[in-house]
Length: 91
Image (cartoon, rainbow, N blue to C red):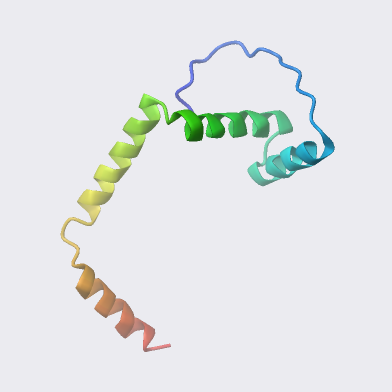
């Protein structure tokens, strides 16, 4: 979401029914932002769901996956499960 070009914001008026306004206020409280910002974030997320993530966002995701692959490169899943089960028996 950060890869959008910096521009002067444009004002758009949106008429919300009471249920939608309540949902927007609830999201704003959850995100700790203004209702307008909660609506902006929601529109961007819906855009990504419907039309796919931007190329910048895909690059970020790919880089994150590569970091995870490196972190778990020498990990033995069977040994990890065995260790965790042994730790759980102590409780």
